[in-house]
Amino acid sequence: MEQDLEDFLAAAAEDAGKRVDVWLAERLCCSRSHAQTLLGDGRVTKEGTASRAGKVLKANDKVRGGDRVRVELPTPAPLEAQPENIPLDILYEDDDVIVLNKPRGMVVHPAAGHAGGTLVNALLYHCRNLSGINGVIRPGIVHRLDKDTSGVMIAAKNDEAHLSLSRQIAAKTARRSYLAVVRGNVKEDEGEIVTRIARDKADRKKMAVVSEGGREAITDYKVLERYGEYTVVRCDLKTGRTHQIRVHMEYLGHPLVGDPKYSPRKVPFAIDGQALHSYTLDFIHPRTGQAMHFEAPLPTDLRKILTRLRNGQF
Image (cartoon, rainbow, N blue to C red; front, top):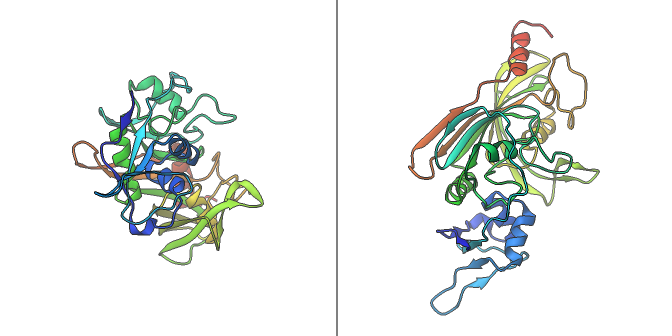
């Protein structure tokens, strides 16, 4: 048995010129390799016209604004990630979505070096069903948080919910805000960082701002509290690139406190990883159309940092 996504994916004018595999990965919030597998299996078709049949798309085809694309999903393969009885901090759950408060230190999905103990392993134990769009290693995962970033995130329990949430993220109607503690005194009270981000050529495990190539990345920030050597900021994502806030704040000259990858310096605070918390999430419920808003309580380590800063203990 195979599944068709009920609606077409529509390409916007700004998508024109992108490779189909890149665009499809963005729209489905899946890995590029998974998108290439769907394309290679002939499961992605551009809508035809009255006089021309639909075209089976290839990975290197280019998207045109207004294209309408149908994706035929294969029946999910037997699960490769295994269920594990790991406690979850659930903020909300129904038949379509589950909203969680992820702890710092938890990996979202299995990967090299992290075969178990992940959020996906916990979800598989807790949930009877999860969406299959993102493959058998990342079932239900619509967006990710870095291992050492805590806070609110959402998973989809079926493909319809996954597709709806992916569309909202692509259209920027699903909104995510983060609280971060950064080094130094941020000069402006608020601003917008607009760059392109790609893999760092010198270190493939890092991302970097680049002048050409890469993908557009946009972060809005607002200063909440100033403490001379440190600043507390709120960051609102307009795009969702890998390590986006960490890279953007370092680019601004104010790397995140405790960031082991982009600011590996000792800090006078007890925190294992970057001081970054996914604070709020807003989206439209995929079935009911209701506006949903969630806030994840700050973890203990971040609360203690804020208390010390406010008391001048640094």
